[in-house]
Amino acid sequence: MKKIAFASLLTLGLFALPAFGLEGKVSGQEIPALQYALDTVWVIFAAVLVFFMQAGFAMVESGFTRAKNASNIMMKNMMDFVIGSLSFYVIGFAVMFGNGTPFIGLEGFLPTAAQADSYSSLAWTSVPVLTAYFFQVVFAATAVTILSGAAAERIKFSTYLIISVLVTTVIYPVSGHWAWGGGWLSGLGFVDFAGSSVVHSVGGWASLAVVLVLGARLGKFNAAGKAMAIPGHNIPMATLGVFILWFGWYGFNPGSTMAATVNIGDIAVTTTLAGAAAALSAFIFTFMLYKRADVGMTLNGALAGLVGITAGCANVSPLGAIVIGLIVGILVVVSVLFFDKVKIDDPVGAISVHGVCGSTGTLLVGLFDTQKGLLYGGGIDMLITQAIGVFSIALWAFGSSIVLFKILDMVMGLRVTEEEEHVGLDYSEHGAAAYPDFNISSVSARN
Image 1 (cartoon, helix red, strand yellow):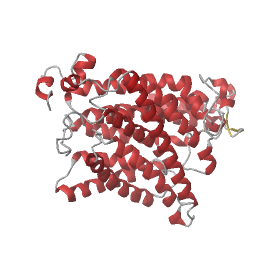
Image 2 (cartoon, helix red, strand yellow; image 1 turned 120 degrees about the vertical axis):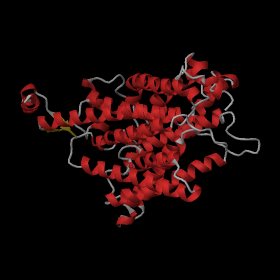
Image 3 (cartoon, rainbow, N blue to C red; image 1 turned 90 degrees about the vertical axis):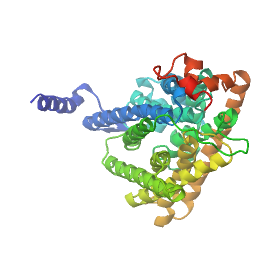
Image 4 (tube, rainbow, N blue to C red; image 1 turned 120 degrees about the horizontal axis):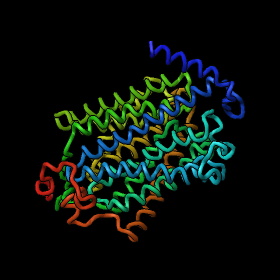
């Protein structure tokens, strides 16, 4: 009875909103108060789901790496959100969504409810400015935390904190402005609905830059240059992290409507099918290669499918989503093996999952978009536009990152000392272990 009474009061409250003057606007047109309230509640709920993905990233990255670095990874995931939420509020949100040039936003720093006119690029959604910030800041945190896994086990904690600021104020918002903030890519008709390129590939290509500056972990490659396995310490933790990420993706993709619209169910379906198809194709492909069911590759296959469908989740059919998933599920395996072959050490496969599969998924929208895609009779124009967007965002993310990270390396140093890496970053950076009942450093110091 209490639940029924609460629901009744909530419904009455929503219908009573006009009495308080709470009407929203979409592109200058007023919408009903009930729709305004539902849109706002939906976007906040979706943002909370995406926020929970931070826990998923922390668990995946920690599980795929060694126990002597587990606390360090957890701390990086904690602090990149703490720092990123502040820096994105002060600078990043305005750079990304504020009125300005086709290349960068110049208005709306330190956003407030009264600054709606400074964000013309958000006029299509009815939600208040601060609600829009809340939804977008968790996306910014996703972009930066991708680097945490790629740089795991050898990056200085203090330098990583500076990287968090750079990604959330410059690297991510600038290309985000191009595609989502009314910039030049949106003018071309570039489609990246929820961020395969804007969020994920930015994180992936920035990860490639930081890995190139850092170099490989000690012991990753032998004298002959062959990649040596460095097993993760807790695959069950990594698996739970993938499930949490998948769960959060139902805020990431359907929430990008930024409105309680009828197609959020369709987006949830394409998201599910792509993730499942990619996990299946990664599993089958690795089984064909190794004659065993590879847990890590299957987990990364699921993430690759979710990343790959994020650009076109609102624009492709369920069958198209399955095909996209099958493609990126195989691609992520090939990509991981390729980076090992060329001696690029990415402990969690972040470059492959987010960079390679994010870019590929965005490009595939040009084939599978049900309105303008090449395979649906739309011609090649959309595919060309997608290619321009994919290349431009990748070039910006990698180019700006490697320049900034090189400067950081010269000024502060990017990598811990060899001895600190041997002991583990839990002890050397934080003075405490994730598992104090076990002598992790002596067991794992030279592994």
